[in-house]
Amino acid sequence: MRLSVELTPKQEQQLAAIAARLNIAPEVLAAAALRDLLDRREDEFEAAAARGLEKNRDLYRRLA
Figure 1: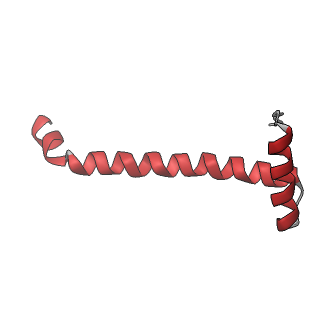
Figure 2: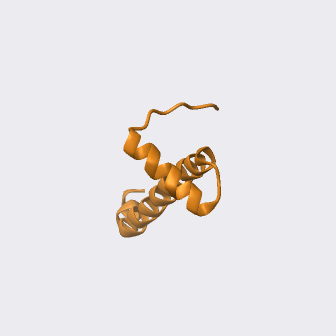
């Protein structure tokens, strides 16, 4: 999927500065950051769901 985003000049400068420090293209950094965000959300959801299931295990057992 190809995605286009609009950054403010300040955000563009920040992205370019961080990418330069990491010696990668700004586009590569932005794509990696987005992938990391999406992966983390999935992990956080699964962890929250597991906590909810564990917390209510006895309730679910009684309702079954």
